[in-house]
Image (cartoon, one colour):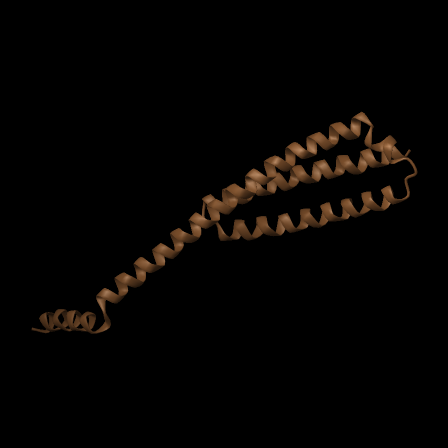
Length: 143
């Protein structure tokens, strides 16, 4: 009974980690397409999944506190296999997080550069010069 409960919780953890990885991939797509709405939605989804993971972790720890023979659980092949699969998913998650951080950094730099170019363009036009150009056009139409 003890081992089966830990196996079920660990399976739920693995499934939730895979959901987190899928959320990271969706977030990557939103970053690439410059979708602010998608990025916010992805971030909210990640927070929800992290809360679920925290809950599962707490449940597992609470259950393991009352177990008499932890060796039986840690030596179980199914548990070891699930832990290996979770480690592989965690490795993919780390790569996806790193990729998303780099993409976000690039996007922020791109937006900053665009804003600087716009401001530079506006400052070269100048308000006074623009007004003079407009008055010459208006006068030519009147004459």
